[in-house]
Image (cartoon, rainbow, N blue to C red; front, side, top):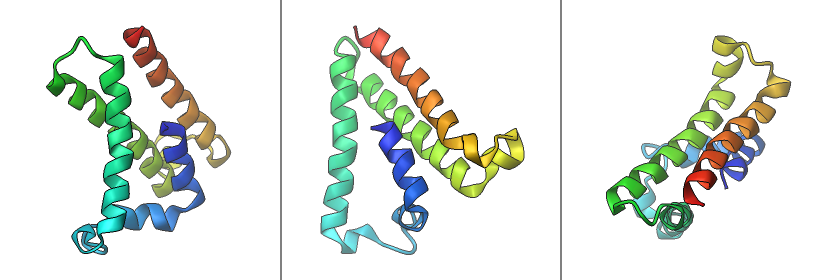
Length: 114
């Protein structure tokens, strides 16, 4: 799911950027995109809740937010050029790095959820 998030951002940067500009697109006026946004986040929360059944709801919610923040942050760093400028990651390698970071995070969650 995280890889698809970053991939979408890289394939459709303008859509990705406007999706998170509440000042440009007030989602309260557009119930269908709002519903889709809620469903997508709901799938993430559901997966986290299943993997961490032994944790309180609030902890599971925080893990879901951390996972979202991770992939959103990666996508934003790539689109804004920060990985290239600040960390020196060449553009051609940024998608691979994002995949590796997401893979590492996922494997930690999988080990924890087993």
